[in-house]
Amino acid sequence: MDLPAGDIWVVDTSSLINVKELIKVDHRPLVFLELTKLCDLGRLVFPQEVVDELKNGIKSGKPDAPLIWAKQNKKSGCRLGACAVGTFGWDNGQVED
Image 1 (cartoon, helix red, strand yellow):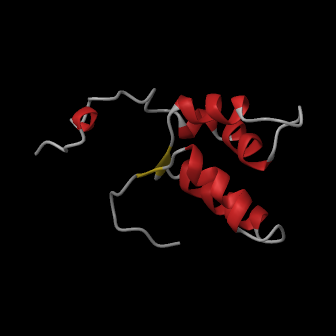
Image 2: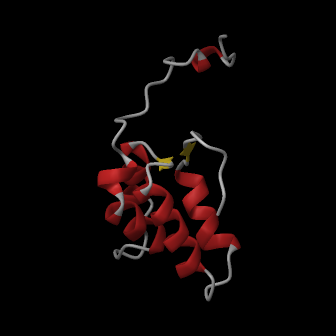
Protein backbone atom coordinates (compact mmCIF):
# COMPACT_ATOMS: atom_id res chain seq x y z
CA MET A 1 0.00 0.00 0.00
CA ASP A 2 1.47 3.33 -1.03
CA LEU A 3 0.72 6.39 1.07
CA PRO A 4 1.90 9.93 0.48
CA ALA A 5 5.04 10.67 2.46
CA GLY A 6 4.42 11.89 5.99
CA ASP A 7 0.72 11.07 6.15
CA ILE A 8 -0.58 9.43 9.32
CA TRP A 9 -3.94 7.74 9.15
CA VAL A 10 -6.27 7.70 12.15
CA VAL A 11 -8.92 5.00 12.44
CA ASP A 12 -11.90 4.90 14.72
CA THR A 13 -13.94 2.05 16.11
CA SER A 14 -16.36 1.96 13.20
CA SER A 15 -13.49 1.57 10.73
CA LEU A 16 -12.40 -1.65 12.40
CA ILE A 17 -15.96 -2.92 12.76
CA ASN A 18 -16.46 -2.27 9.04
CA VAL A 19 -13.62 -4.67 8.27
CA LYS A 20 -15.63 -7.38 10.02
CA GLU A 21 -18.92 -6.37 8.41
CA LEU A 22 -17.87 -5.48 4.87
CA ILE A 23 -14.85 -7.64 4.04
CA LYS A 24 -15.29 -11.29 3.14
CA VAL A 25 -14.05 -13.56 5.91
CA ASP A 26 -11.30 -15.01 3.69
CA HIS A 27 -9.84 -11.54 3.07
CA ARG A 28 -9.98 -10.18 6.63
CA PRO A 29 -6.61 -11.59 7.76
CA LEU A 30 -4.89 -9.80 4.87
CA VAL A 31 -6.65 -6.53 5.68
CA PHE A 32 -5.64 -6.74 9.33
CA LEU A 33 -2.09 -7.69 8.30
CA GLU A 34 -1.85 -4.57 6.13
CA LEU A 35 -3.23 -2.43 8.97
CA THR A 36 -0.60 -3.94 11.27
CA LYS A 37 2.14 -3.04 8.79
CA LEU A 38 0.90 0.56 8.76
CA CYS A 39 0.94 0.65 12.57
CA ASP A 40 4.44 -0.76 12.64
CA LEU A 41 5.58 1.92 10.19
CA GLY A 42 4.00 4.62 12.36
CA ARG A 43 1.55 5.49 9.61
CA LEU A 44 -1.67 4.38 11.33
CA VAL A 45 -2.86 5.29 14.81
CA PHE A 46 -6.00 5.00 16.88
CA PRO A 47 -6.98 6.37 20.29
CA GLN A 48 -7.30 4.15 23.37
CA GLU A 49 -11.05 4.77 23.16
CA VAL A 50 -11.15 2.41 20.16
CA VAL A 51 -9.94 -0.51 22.28
CA ASP A 52 -12.36 0.44 25.07
CA GLU A 53 -15.33 0.71 22.70
CA LEU A 54 -14.52 -2.62 21.06
CA LYS A 55 -14.33 -4.26 24.50
CA ASN A 56 -17.72 -2.77 25.41
CA GLY A 57 -19.23 -4.08 22.18
CA ILE A 58 -18.50 -7.75 22.83
CA LYS A 59 -21.77 -9.66 23.01
CA SER A 60 -20.62 -13.27 22.87
CA GLY A 61 -18.14 -12.99 25.71
CA LYS A 62 -15.15 -13.63 23.49
CA PRO A 63 -13.18 -11.04 21.52
CA ASP A 64 -13.81 -10.66 17.81
CA ALA A 65 -11.23 -9.92 15.10
CA PRO A 66 -11.31 -6.09 15.43
CA LEU A 67 -10.71 -6.24 19.19
CA ILE A 68 -7.99 -8.86 18.88
CA TRP A 69 -6.25 -6.72 16.25
CA ALA A 70 -6.59 -3.51 18.29
CA LYS A 71 -5.18 -5.17 21.41
CA GLN A 72 -2.28 -6.68 19.47
CA ASN A 73 -1.43 -3.28 17.94
CA LYS A 74 -2.18 -1.10 20.95
CA LYS A 75 1.45 -0.22 21.70
CA SER A 76 2.16 1.27 18.27
CA GLY A 77 -1.42 2.26 17.42
CA CYS A 78 -2.14 4.19 20.61
CA ARG A 79 1.27 5.82 20.89
CA LEU A 80 -0.15 9.33 20.46
CA GLY A 81 -2.45 9.01 23.48
CA ALA A 82 -6.14 9.46 24.00
CA CYS A 83 -8.53 11.34 21.80
CA ALA A 84 -8.98 14.92 22.97
CA VAL A 85 -12.19 16.50 21.76
CA GLY A 86 -11.62 20.14 21.04
CA THR A 87 -7.90 19.79 20.46
CA PHE A 88 -8.39 20.50 16.80
CA GLY A 89 -11.42 22.74 17.11
CA TRP A 90 -13.82 19.93 16.27
CA ASP A 91 -15.88 20.23 19.40
CA ASN A 92 -18.09 22.85 17.77
CA GLY A 93 -18.27 21.10 14.42
CA GLN A 94 -15.74 23.40 12.75
CA VAL A 95 -12.10 22.87 11.99
CA GLU A 96 -9.88 25.80 12.85
CA ASP A 97 -7.11 26.91 10.51
